[in-house]
Image 1: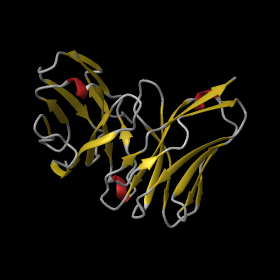
Image 2: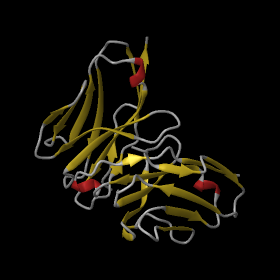
Image 3: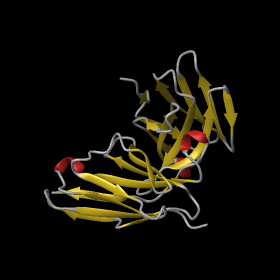
Image 4: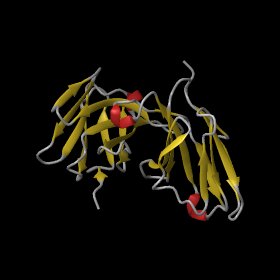
Length: 111
Length: 116
């Protein structure tokens, strides 16, 4: 079946480095993608979104890149801080407005 | 602005018992979602409400799960009877408009259910 998945379950980085979290999707009908951050004991928190008519979108310290050719999107976090430690999920919507979440990547930031 | 409220935060029950979760969305948010998040996985949508109507409940196990949003505001999710595999965090989220229309979802802290 079609699904959203992540390449790396855990990513460890040093404070100040840039982080890149990847997500692969297989539903070619997906037209809206969202990245969420989930800290322990909390619900997911919206970080940034992108529509399929865009390749790149930037926020504060975060950038999402969408490659529709290979059905891949990534989240780049600049100057990673300890407070960025969390599990990151990508989610896709494919017209039915039902978001499908991937498995998640755990980002660990070492001081 | 107050966030999405959920209660209880934790619940431990034995299998075959019943349990109910409550969610109060952000004021004015028309769309409400219930998700199930099993440990180590991403949230899975169970049901989506638009005001007090169900938009989609295709992933809700209707033989044991039920949900309602009678007045288009608060919502309850019930499991009766519970099974061991229902152990998970149940997340409620709300958005001003449906997510696919660009409506940002705001999540509550969740209710952690343990079924023994």
